[in-house]
Amino acid sequence: MANTRREFLSAVSTAAALSALHTQVGASVTPVKYATANCPPAMGIAVVGLGTQSVRNVGPLFANPLQANHPTCRISALVSGDASKAQAYAKAWSIDRSHVYDYDSFDRIAADEAIDIVYLAVPTGMHCELAVRAAKAGKHVFCESPMAIDSVECREMIDAFTRYSRRLAVASAPLARSTKCFGPIESIDAAQSFRIEQPNSWRLDRALAGGGAVFQAGFDVLRTCRLWAGSDPVWVIAQESKTDAQRFARIDESVTWTLGFDNGAIAHGAVSLNYKGQGHLRVQGQLASLSSEFPTQNQWSRADQLLAFAGSIQGKPVIPGNRFNPLDAHEALQDVVLAEAIFRSIQERRQVQLG
Image 1 (cartoon, helix red, strand yellow):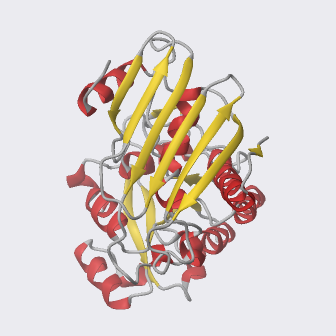
Image 2 (cartoon, one colour):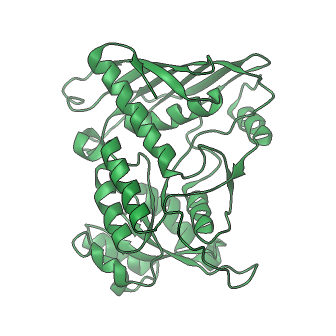
């Protein structure tokens, strides 16, 4: 049994057999040819939204690709509703002002040949509109998870990228798993949480966030459970609890659920936006079991995933993946469909059938 996070990551990472990454929305795109086998052309990224994710986890690695050792991608444009912040980062990252946009001028990126990929690091409620506008502008899109606030918007995004022959990818961070050493999985117990400290955070607004604990803390848990179960869920039953009904009036504060899979596996999940504690992952297989902290992120960072997406566009994936670690928009849609089933179970106080 792996009892520590390090042991857990080592066990599952070395045992995982990951298939080649393939982002297939807009599959008619002709792959870009490399200039040489060892020197692919750098793809330009327009960073949309200058919050913590883009500024801390993506910007420093791609702002100067030669120093950062990522010559295949570079930040070539910025989009922000805060003009002063955009200009400050443009100066820091050596981006010409002609490549700085706001949301009103966003459609002008169609004429900006320095932009190949649009990275959406904005609240979930803004994903659909901006993604569709980017597709119309002829750009590929990598967006943060969740993909959109509901399955209707997810399908609208997929349809747009198919129509305009562009590629759409969604950030993903489930954990790798072994396909053999645990044997058939019998049960999974996973939990993740964090506390929203700012009283006016956009995360408390359903229109911007799409949902509360399930959308903001639950998608990695759901994907990890699906990955370890090795099959699709066929039913779910869930319940919500609130300790602060005023603060969480419009979104779910804490949610627990049970998923039943078509191979007989059972998964219990718990997520919260009002608890600051370490999550966990426990797996019981016929041959072995595992107990670990639930890592805050998987081995593939956002920068890794952007590199992988750029590589897939150019016909040369950079990192491997499996059904869930890839950036596939159809899997991201299934995340949202499952979340909607959880909400329906809570509202109707019953088990909901899936599929």
